[in-house]
Length: 187
Ligand SMILES: CC(C)(COP(=O)(O)OP(=O)(O)OC[C@H]1O[C@@H](n2cnc3c(N)ncnc32)[C@H](O)[C@@H]1OP(=O)(O)O)[C@@H](O)C(=O)NCCC(=O)NCCS
Image (cartoon, rainbow, N blue to C red):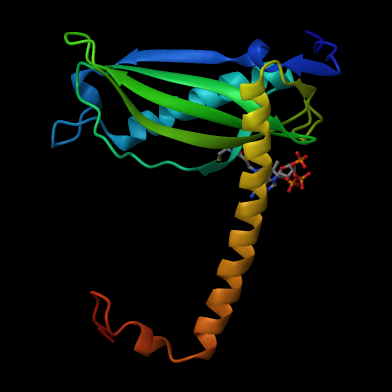
């Protein structure tokens, strides 16, 4: 089947998706809460759905940002993952995912986390391929696009500063830095 002819630009709403799943007992850990890996797998699926819809091609996950599970998810809750493409580069897309969990008996909804998946579109030969530009349809879309630019800049700056810090640590007395840490040298 031939690939579709891609438009030059696609609206944010075109690829917005929601995935809802009931948290069944087999998803639970020994403490009775839902495994973080179950939620990560659902986030990866919904990120893939949003990215590949926008790209009109298969996409792969390159990096994941901002995964903090601050509230546990319980068995029996209905988890919804709301995803949209926040930003596109040439071949990459940043998908924002908001995860909420609803207790169906009380109607209480909690926001468990918001995370950002960077995906890259691939062509039939497996090479990164260009994606349509993003049509920002609301001021909210523009705010998210702008935030994504800042996120990229901060991540690049963080990587550089972290690598510099590691080089400096190697130069000073590493053992001294461990004095107040909860470890002991066993060799
Ligand atoms: C991601 C991948 C395609 C990058 O390949 P590459 O040869 O470095 O390609 P490019 O340099 O052209 O980069 C492609 C895009 O990825 C982005 N990218 C590359 N590394 C990145 C990183 N660490 N974080 C964020 N974006 C990254 C680039 O900025 C570029 O985006 P742009 O086209 O919008 O500017 C390649 O590393 C890959 O296929 N990785 C495996 C992904 C996979 O299989 N994931 C599934 C889980 S196993």
